[in-house]
Length: 226
Image 1 (tube, rainbow, N blue to C red):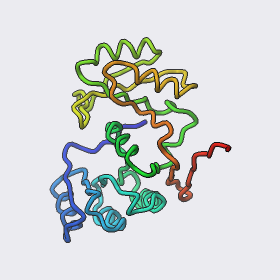
Image 2 (tube, one colour):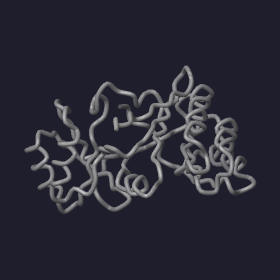
Image 3 (cartoon, rainbow, N blue to C red):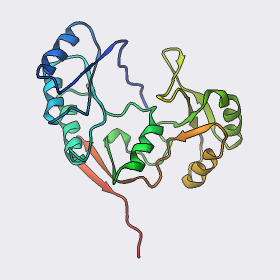
């Protein structure tokens, strides 16, 4: 999966401010390459569109958009619309926070994934490695044990430095050839000392809303027969 270039400098804008669009225009003019719209104060999804349309080069990203306030299908339609209007400038999902994402998912009534069509794959691991979050102290041991489980771990590095998660941990990007039994793979990784989270979100999501060039598709997890 290609790495998204967000540039060296970014800034945060609150949609709760009356002049948030003007702020975004000024920040882009000052050379900020990425503008983050905080999700909490957002009252309308159209606020994202307003910033994208008012700017010309900056990438626009949001904080967590609550699906309690904005239906997942509407977020998917927004992404499809903005991808057609300004390809590649509206950023969804930067990765590296799957530990917190799992906590939020476990606390939520329902988890709905919103993504674009580039995230659809024939099998896990086809385009991107599995992220495994490890405490720094345990890195050498975790790497050795993961290799023993058939993984090829590689420390995630951004701009020449090890990537640090919100909890102060490191990320190992793990690859392998065989991905048949994902439940067994996830269970084995969870048993590695020092691993605090991994990118397998098995059983969490009830649906996925996918923005495509042809429109928005909704994928539902099959229900088990009685």
